[in-house]
Image 1 (cartoon, one colour):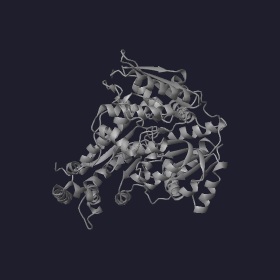
Image 2: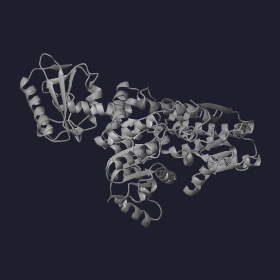
Image 3: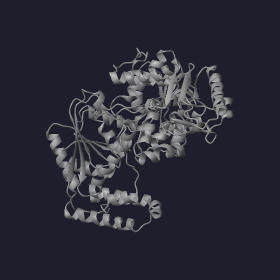
Image 4: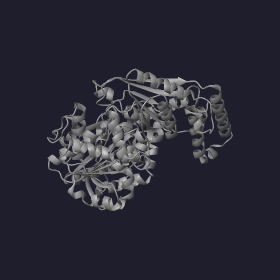
Length: 615
């Protein structure tokens, strides 16, 4: 509700200025306009929004105070419109009348969502505005045909994703396809690119992905859309330059994040119909060079693919959206003030506002929601207990680090972050096998023995195993032990070439090897390993998203057996406490994408001491 200190001449001036602005916008194709009426006596703010055939700019004025008129006799008492504050820069009446003020078109959907529940607002939408909102609400029924040349049958949810991508591109927006791993994000994008070509659209699509997935993309493109002209921008600098330079003659150009960073000057002269970032968490750090390079790309449409849009903190989501639609979530500082800090402080209104803002532009489906025929997945934590010799080494290292941290000020702690992380890593290695950090150690490893029992039982039961670890040196130890006991193994690490990687995957899928040993970072994404139905996580990573991605190598479309997932944990150690931290980080993502409460996922001094069992 608005309270009015009557100055009717000012009210009339505001109304006239906004009407003038709306009239000028509606006279130009591709704008949405808004008018605010403030009525004395009724104390109701009426918002009229109109659409004129396009969505390039939007003006929506949420309250008079936000228009820079506070202190001029009009003020807000209610607060129901507070969520609209900060959606645009503060302006005065003259600026409004001059027609130089607006908001990004994507805000129309946010404003519509927020004003649905504002009791003191009468919202009047014209037919064009209603169509804009309706198109998003019913994208699955959009008149967009699955391309005839697609050599795959899309599942229902994949057709929905295909039409969602098409709806976004036609309206000039970007979006995040955030489906659970294994649901076919690649296929949905290929269908979209092929569909646009069959509709007569021209231009090249640029796919940017991790280096390990370049050939996977090329293989999938050839398999599902052989009619597309596709080239991988790899090889020597001159070869890459030639490929990039010929993009106008191509349908799809595929490159890696690393090569994008090296070739950014060559890309500066190229225009693309669309850019798709696969595993878009690679640009989660806004200060990273690869992030800056991605944001420099010139394209009509931008999309991001990731099963983990938020791994550790909300700033990662901001970075992805700053690539998709620069400025939509404000500057980094504005985002931190408006969303990040309040959400981490468990302020429900901030979480609601953020979900309203990103909701239309994030499509996320989980396996449990869309794949009724996918075999079950069971997850178990298997605990191991250290023998006295291993425990003595662990406790000595843990107590020394805890004593050091307890006597440090927060400022000192921040300056020695890398050193502390190295010490925490040492504790995790002792849990895996003390020989990783103590040369000449001749005692046992409780976890290794537990792992061998699990593997033996799985192989005896006719199962095949994926075993993940962050430590390649640990994988070497496990490989030697498995070989000594007669098990056949394959191994994939960061040093495995892209060509060898493909050969290893084909060999395992064809039945070669009892156990596939994979480093988490190198093999957690982009692999289809459905011939395995047992997954062992030898050591826990800081956030569960990476481990979930790795599990998704087996539990995905094409899996015919129930999948058993085992997490090996040494009881009473840092590993047990990492499990709790993982849940906090899972909550961070779900609070924004699904609407629950959230706890900050940042490591504090207290967090570190808790990891050491000293809090």
